[in-house]
Image: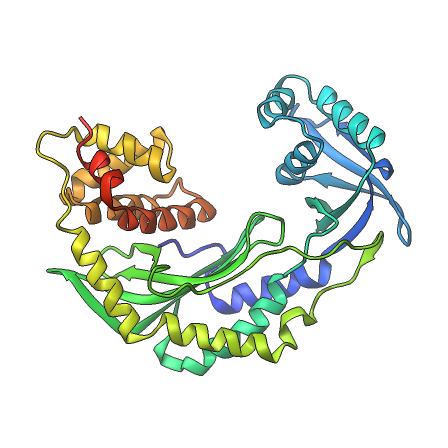
Length: 364
């Protein structure tokens, strides 16, 4: 499991607090926006967004890759065409976005941080920000005291993550393979997913993480969907969760559910069963990896390294396949965001069953 750039709870909280005090959000019509391409010494296109908003007047922000992609998507420009124009003709991409935005104006939410436009969203987007989420979560963590240990945390351009483990809850899947129960809290402020609390499993021997357990206890998931908002500057949403007693109680109850001994034992039993589902003797392990990647969502390039970890691990079972993926999640070239996605993919692998699983294990 990767540590993360802001790998301690104190560092994470300080960075979340800094971002909360400097971020700025507003809603304005697309007719008040213009995308421009600025020259750079490296000859790489840099896109800026010039806006006009009641209360702030004219402003300019550099567009990060996600916000630019979201602008193109909202204008119904195909993603493959966007990628081609960024490389071949960035001015044409800016022209297409501007022409469509000005001809068919709609209100959009722009989220900014440190002088950059970091997200381009619907005016119905409900801001569930990291600061009030963390402010509500921390008392539940501190209440557990030594029963919870922060193993990893980070905040990237797209998501916040907090991964905690309970040393008191542990069990053996097979000889020498001991798992501990934990929880992952994640949230995106830029339109890339709900805020969630899910079960996390931590392997002591190789420090792999796996996100699973939804069939035992569902955790919490809240979508960023609200009602239409009016044009203008948006104030910080500090009180969305922090002052909600009902939400705080829900968080506490979910912590108790995800760290329940009975639920953990059910998860261990299910994982033990996956050690009996083995790659068929006549199957081709490389074909198994290809079929698995198509099913759960990793690329062929990733599959090549996952195959190496599978061979090194020597476990050709369904459980071994999941561990090969979560072991790859720790490799240096894997970003923290992708690493966490791979931990969730590991959970998908142990959830496979029936004919779908047979087809993968028998691939030849």
